[in-house]
Image (cartoon, rainbow, N blue to C red; front, side, top):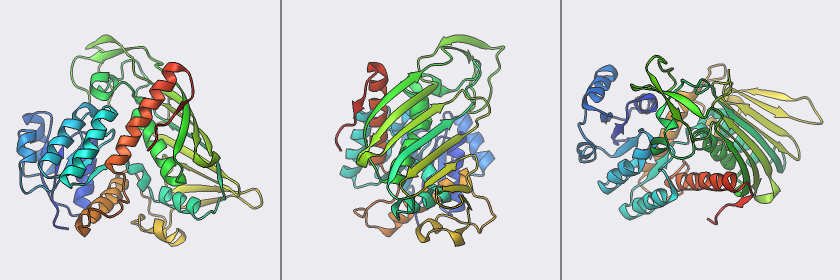
Length: 381
């Protein structure tokens, strides 16, 4: 493809980006971590040649075509802005920025610079989520009537579990809805092709006081409760949202980061006039297909049995499982393929900056609804 990348952020998700880029054969010019020590350690551990010492050095590297932003949320705007202003394309982790003022500015800046921005709503790229979209669009389940779903985790179950996402100034005023709920909402909107009209939300901070460690904690790792201090928490551990989509489609979503035993249970069911579909991210290679008039079916991921379009996103034969790391590969394949084609005016088949702007706006509507305890309409496009 002759395109080269640089990655900002060397934590959990930064490493996922690096792995996917390598699988696609996209050269990684270097990385930038939160400190010189952390950056150099990442380079040694990952076998990368260049450890940038600053954002200015990274975006000033003329050999870099695409910057991957994989840092805490509060840094996304400034890092994406700097990359765009330096003539780079951007792949940004979600959320795109902390509010719609920032996301709107990034959308406009990308247009002005004639650069392409994408947001990592990678969960669209599970092969059977691609298949679910094809089945819905082909009318296999008839007219979608209901959508039901959850996104449940337990990594913040204990009061001494800690992560930067708990701090509003780093992660934003919303947490569970913004962090995992937007993945579900993006996925359902994309699968059904229906846009949200209005919603009614309930949010709760289940653990109002947590024990913050006095040293750094990696995402998904427990802190040491011997070196902690009590901190009041204002962000949401839990949320439920009633949803009204275009075309009379109704739905409900529940998210939680305090549900014991649920590691990453993103589940959806779409009930149509002719049948139903259900999928669970903890069992990503199975798609349940429900029927009233015949036996239910369980489609095990197999490219030879999938729709032609969805088949393009299944890299391995039937019986060979594909999971979370593969979603980044498929997303990046779409993104870099688009860039390599050279027509930056063409329709974008991946989650764009416009997608990121919409999802941050959706979170603001959820917050307004929870605060006013009322239905709130989505703003016009």
